[in-house]
Length: 375
Image (tube, rainbow, N blue to C red):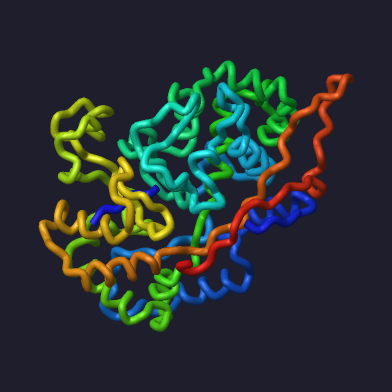
């Protein structure tokens, strides 16, 4: 089974607190982290496939882009920075809203000049665990992915040189110097992508009911969710949707869209056998990321599950089976970190010097709903 990914206000004083939230394991609190550590040592319930893995509290940290407080802070600002688009109105957060499960809730993304993209915006949460980015897998890393939308005509529509100059003119140089110490000219396009990727690796949602169940808490799932889990395994959904994200690492043909103009991975590989092949969608938080599929054609999770049964498994799920599968998928909703809107550099004093707030005094406005459970 393959399903697409896709406010209360408060003021936080001190970026030490802010960065603690962003880098802290799962941003879910010490007690919950301790609980999850204990759960991992417990025995998983009988009948649960070893192909499932609990979502870790931290993401892999690549050697060529180490995560530091300064780098995450810069990436946080750049993720919300509209000056990285030609009209200065669109940011990464426009299509991957961190306060709305990392999506824009549109069938197809809308970018610069109200131009329409061709695909649904996948969620940015937990993308750190993907083996490849984008629906067609054309970017192998978060760093490579971050470069694409900035340059894409229908998304943000800037050249790398324009992006760098805009940030330089706005006052970002001291932030890049702090995030990439020792470099002669740290404000460059590669480092823009590295900073955004470092921030995105903090966007994790551990602590779902399913994670607690995998950790040995047999009461974490309802009876209907357990029925859905058994069906998910028995019907063959687990063949594609397994691992830490229940999907996301691999590709599969999607017969439901055969005949459409979007040929999927074939546009990247140029191989006929890759026509209508797309990256298998990860299912973490899938209950919050409608509409579904790469083209946003399924408006509800019930509809998506029914379609996947027919298209991928050649099976007509009953209404009760669809309800059970949806109930299980709702158990995959994790605990979302609180991501404030950052304070962005804007005014350069006449002296030409930019005042950079110390890491422990920056203020930011929170504009994110804390999501917990399957609400």
